[in-house]
Image: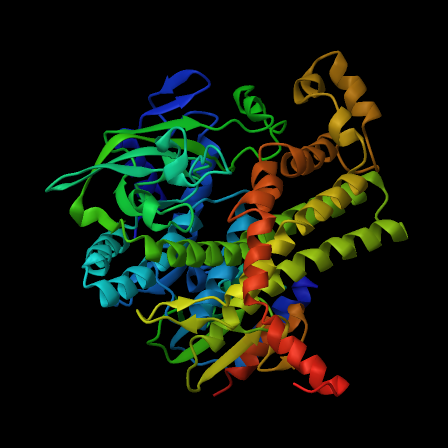
Length: 113
Length: 481
């Protein structure tokens, strides 16, 4: 499962993501349904490999990822922003259910310029 | 904001007068019985530095615009009230214990709106004094102990009619530069992990009780304050030096008696002194906020207890039994009902004249009324799933013993593949929350903390809008109004 996920991430990265500053903003994590820390670290690793700079919660960024632990989506709800951004809320990416294993690859796909 | 290390160091610099089991404690930070409770408060500083939790653990000060710890914040809208409950659930999950710092947060929110309204009506300057204190509290990231409950002596008599008037905190002298206070606050959660104390009256005072209508702040280690540390069930297990017999090695909570032995308080730190007609509002609002709090913190501890019960079922090989699954469902249902009440009273909050938001008092009291019951049922179900071994199991020292250990290891094994020690650890955790040191917070504090059950029933009766409900019934039944 892990290998498959990494392969998918690499495919997406190779094709699409442009370098720049990407911010990852968390919800508060009161009762998360996904492992936000793992997802964030996987995203960070993949994006840095592609030459992106990843910052935690910064407002000044070329692209923003809002990472919430459940469907309440507090990361975006309390800090709404204009595109370009992608909203992860539990196992949904931009309101579409993808399952925890596919969150990272889906986020990277959404970063397609 | 303070780092967790700075918080710990700041306590080391304080000069508390604390007695514990008949001895004066010189180093409260490293005392093995006290230390776990300090770790719980310290976690409020740790998580505030963590990007994964700062959305809940921090807020923007309405006074300075600076980022502050949410425990020092005045609620500026329903979002803040909701985030407070979520933060408390998070903290309960991280510590499985009472993390103590919410009492001060609830106290400053109550004192803010009441002093504002008092100044407007009476022309006093209490709110300005309070705001000056709050600014320093936010800047220094202080932990503040909210002190309300007096020892109360004869419950059938008012404060002024007690045989010993010191059984309610009171002003014994008014000077040009301040007041002298005598009395004792009971059950003071987190007292010796706090930088300051914020004292409030224990109940609605009448004119004859004006000397007992009192609110002020003082450094927690001020000359004239003496603490006598409260015992907890199984507390001396922390002195044994093992790894898991205490159930939760790292975290805990604490309460203490807080005695004012003619404590001097300068006027700039006094927020209520004799204005008895505002004592009721202060008590009601503080209690309301604190009844909301329990819809977060107890839920977080409940999450850990449900998880522990599920693990115990796994290790016992019972997790596929339908009655066990159903008990876990019931525990979850009860726990989330408490959370729903905490969120509901927050979402239905309203703005007060000072700009600080207050919870819906009816729903907050319903929340707390449920808290007086549901944790007991959750604990009962956890004990049911855990089995009797939770209270008959040998000690960790027996497990480590060269002779006895092999028997413990062999005969207390549950399913294959899970070490006996893991099974013992999870049973000790359940024991800790249901009848050990953490049961102080999870059970009896759920009953009496923020007011005993009858106090909520009085508020529910007052807020229940019964006449309007009668009118509804009359209309539907065709009875003339």
